Image 1 (cartoon, rainbow, N blue to C red):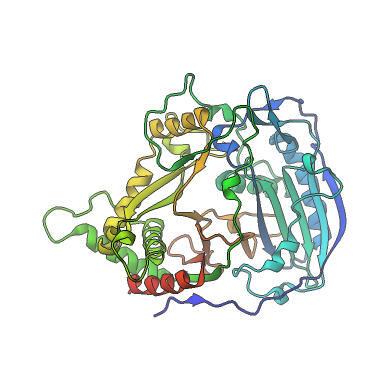
Image 2 (cartoon, rainbow, N blue to C red; image 1 turned 180 degrees about the horizontal axis):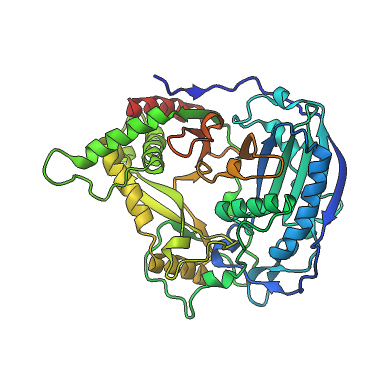
Amino acid sequence: MRTVSQEPPPLIQDLKVTVHDTSLVFPSEHIPNKPFFMSNIDKVLNFDVQTIHFFPVHVEFPPDKVAERLKAALAEILVHYEFLSGRLKFNAASGRLEIECNSEGVGFVVASSECSLDDVGDLVYPNPAFERLVTKSLDILQPDNQPLCIVQVTSFTCGGFAMGVSTNHATFDGLSFKMFLQNLGALAADKPLVVDPCNDRRLLAARSPPLVSFPHPELLKLDVPKGQDSSRPLVFKDAPEDLDFKIFKLSPKDIARLKEKAAKDAAGGGLESSYPKARITSFNVVTAHIWRCKALSSCADADDGSSKSRASTLLYAVDIRPRLEPPLPRGYAGNAVLTAYATATCGEMEEWPLGRLVEMVTEGAGRMTDEYARSAIDWGEVNVGFPHGEVLVSSWWRLGFADVEYPWGRPRYSCPLVYHRKDIILLFPDMITTSQNSGDGVNVLVALPAPEMAKFQSLFHKFLA
């Protein structure tokens, strides 16, 4: 079997990072101080996300020159992203989270490591030591006055460096953050913006009056007293739990095998397709495969029937930019993803062929029409709640952060800073094949209690064979 769960490689425990300078970067031009509207999608994403971008040595751009260029480019880009140098605040009168565009700046940190990039070793496997490559908050500011974005440049002894970026998720989704990085790279190279950002988040405002025209089982309503600040999603906070952590690697050949199995199931043996709605894509087959493994790993070994009748709900993000009527502008700079879902019982997932599960994943995304998306946004206007399911598949696979061009070249690897959660499975690109536009492999990051992990691993290989 070519596909294996990767055991932890030798991980460096301490990157020996020293912070040399912490400062604020302000917009290079005046920005009017005004409240900035945030959509119902933005407001439930009020938590920080950290990404790390590793760069090899570049003769013309030593780390100190990179830091200088990045700092200047940040000052310039803040003019185009008027909200980013502001501060989040809760408007008690409207009951909404908004950004005050007060130009109080973004954070900028310069640091160095006593290690070389080669000493860091495996960049794909999440290493707790990577936390030192990102600054999550600035000690020079009060807790209620933290920037929406902090950039840290950490030099390595070899001349390579890491760019760690912490942003509040309410500011960007994955696609708009990639466009932000593309624009930052362009400005650092004294080039024009790659994409003009569209900052008008009222394009995703709820209708007046709101019209919830669909049931939304993918959303969990919370009981929050009216007028209370509900902008911090408490459902994202974990109770302490002892979890095993593994990476399951799927090679291009493994993914092709899953596609072949799903296509054979969908074709059926008769004149008509058995599962005509199934779209046989890499994401769909991988997601269906890991959904089944995750659901069945929670089933009791000695089953009295209750486990097989238990429903499992899969959640995954769908970009609504092209699905709205009219579509959102290409440069829409906010969050424009909603949660699609698929639900089946464990008994069904054990019995059904892969093609049927792929069809369910396909149907979940297909459900996301303009009217359904508007209904979900309106749901957030009349309710306080968050996406809720047994497992969320969060895909960083095709976001393309490693394809962003900077004056000092593309990153060797880009990844989020990982926190282990049993209800979130992450898909990461494989560094070896990121240069391939198609046919690339994927890393599946799973965290589960030890007994469930053993079952997941067994099921993963069983259903792949």
